[in-house]
Length: 459
Image 1: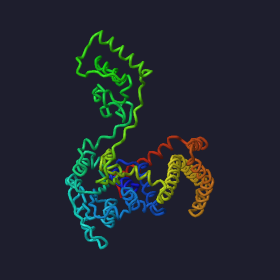
Image 2: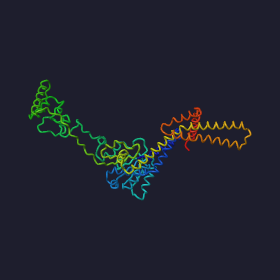
Image 3: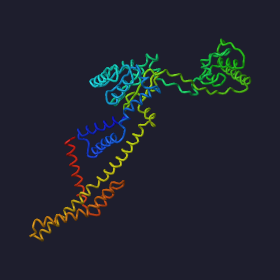
């Protein structure tokens, strides 16, 4: 999911680095190889189908089991972005029977072009129009479905903007819509507790003042109350009646009476009342969605906090990835992963083998110098040697040297390509007594060639 966009980002990044001459040989090789692997994945697997499947699958997730055509019929759609994925989403929505498709894009011309294509299509009669990005907040108040897939690095739709767009349709303030339901904890009011219960006949207390989460029979329910109120509560528990209008009394005497009243309560009830576990708080039902959001962008376009908004259903890349683990396109994804894994191993092997190249070049240079020296020595000892024989002798000596060096140099490159093969270059230098400066000069020559290529920029 998003593979096509990532491949495009790699291509753009490489072009930019080449333009600024900031990509050396290794980065150039790495990014070029990544592009080749991406093309191989598209040609050898069905990963191309994942893009279309992604849009369809996302709409199916929004529809919650209802056929997309039935769910989308007569809805108003807002598509943010005019790239390949957004265009595919707009076309899919149009074919699914939406009444209107509004295209918003940073480049107005591209939005207008996509809207024109949709309007001129033979397979739909959808009303399509283009709007500037500044009109998105207003269009949110009209849209039933929003699909966003842009190249923006930040959020395109914040939770506040979405809440404002659905506020009038669900009769709820944005702040209230954003609030998550309170979890059921011991401190929360529970059904059957003093704070949630209706006033009981004969209870002398204002139950709204009782601390939530406990039974009115429990000692914790009366914590923090004044002595007179506690006395009234004790009498009520014991079945007595009290006058709630009695003047509040404070002081040691009142405390003593309070202790006596609580003791009397314990004797009547038979025990000190225990703390009662609150029952789970019933979560208020969420209103039916009035705005469906599909975020196909990487990184995301739509604030993840929209998941908590009442009247909103959001499907994004994360939720699609979870839902599509067993989808048919998963086989294509697995095949691409195997291709990438093989190519990563091959690239690593090539890089390890490349490290020994300066040593191999230095060895062949040394051999060529030896051949040239011996030929010059031969000419000094045989000054009458004609050109034909001299050329034949020179060629023969070179063939002998090449054959002697061929097997060791090929084998050392193979060994160096394996993990931990870096030591073979050192072994080769030691065995042939190669001058380290000669090897270093070869490396510098390669770096100079690479630098010249960088300065020339992309071809």
